Image 1 (cartoon, rainbow, N blue to C red):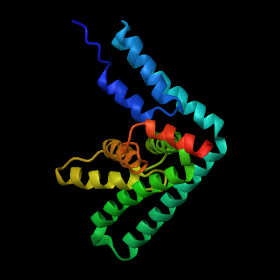
Image 2: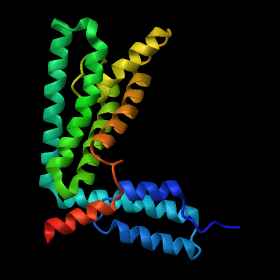
Image 3: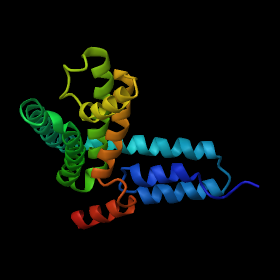
Image 4: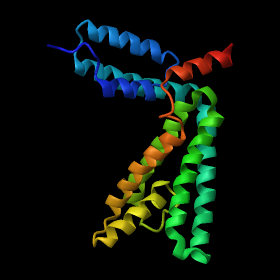
Length: 212
């Protein structure tokens, strides 16, 4: 017998990553149409379309906010990574693990700051911040060597931790460590940006309060 409950993961993704101010209404409409006989494949397609479509619409509509969010995030990132590099070279070479842990914390704080300066549009702006950071990884792999692009992405310092661990077991791969670092970076940015704090309904309430 076919379940009337929509795909849980697709629904969760739409709850947390949908950027539209009418996200709750979209979810309600999709749930109703699914119960009326639509397929799981249809639900997944509509959920992903709603997430991507609302993200692109928010970014194109609020270009100034998007630019501000990236500048804020990059300023924090570049400032900290320069400090960490200098500290590592001059003083804390034996404290590398501590510097890597602090880098993860500062990465989360940079996402939190991006969210704060973006107000009710924080979801698409934090997602933009994450997308740019993720796109920097293949650019790093294809166009730069391991040491020459340390400031390109948050994935670089986080990947260093995986490089140390894998090297301890006799295995090392720049690509593998970078993608492991990217996965952790994505979770850190999403956590710092508030994506796991509450479902999207709270964002609609924030918009209503601000526009009232």
